[in-house]
Length: 129
Image (cartoon, rainbow, N blue to C red; front, side, top):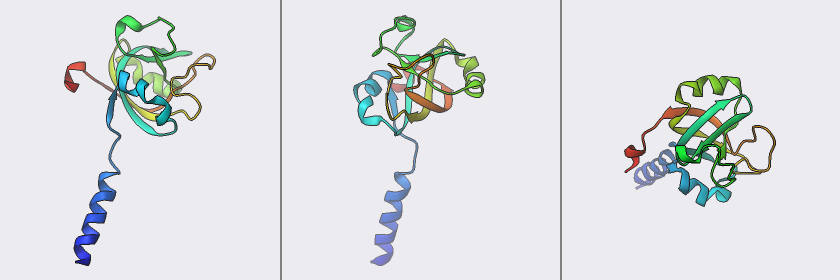
């Protein structure tokens, strides 16, 4: 009996240690306030990512629209920019932690982060359907 209870507890703990669920851009935006300070994986379209500019969009048509609800600022520095370089102007999954003060990066200056990235991977919108 004790062994079964211990096994059940271990299973619950291990299942909660996995990567966060993949969120498409629109689902992230719908719940971004609740995600502040939490780890996330967000899929979307990455425009240019270097210097003072790095944002994730729902689609290529939204790049450069300056709509605060139409983009997510991606933090990071030169190391992340180098890692993101081959994925610019393409669909990606960005893993990281949502900022505690703004989930989109709106209201900041220059490269204000909604997400502080830890990883980036290529992605295809058809994979999630």
